[in-house]
Length: 250
Image (tube, helix red, strand yellow):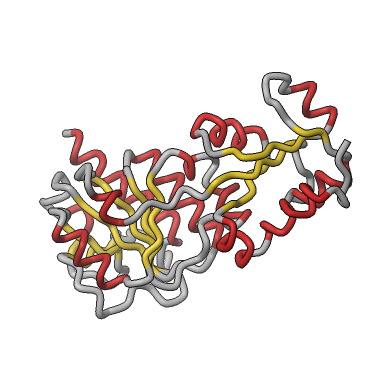
């Protein structure tokens, strides 16, 4: 049984650091749901489980670790007994756009991993085929982002692009209208007549919003009918993406 000192466990633990994830092209996914989706996607390179978890999931060929080793590999207070080492799923922007997706989500300078994972989950549920992390965005393979995606990280194309303006231009060149979610946008979401067209939605950080220099086709606000000052990023993304998804299906 592996312990915290076993070289394979030591190597996997290093993936808690972004530097090591970037260098190796690997990341950690913990919990049965994430592991199940990672296995379906064929990206698992190593799987660790406690003896108790291995009994619950006998179909998984896992290396047994003691409780201390599992706790060191996990990123939660109460780990669920299984952690997988996975290959990162990045694809180039041009590859993600080649199938001409009708709905794409773009996170620009988003720094909170929980928000990043929730946008991934929402985009997947709404039928988006790609999620792009543009500019100075958080690592989508951060442990909290992976957990917040609830397995959706393994369902959509993941693109990381430092050049946000270049990304917008590429989306437009691929025939997508670029809609910027902006609390001060000129257009009311529920009055936009073009939501049924292939679209890429831009979402910015809660602290700073979207860079003003991004040349979106339309800046769209979600109307607020009550006393709230704004919606948080995840809620705004859900409303915008589902509005497009509904229009496209009608």
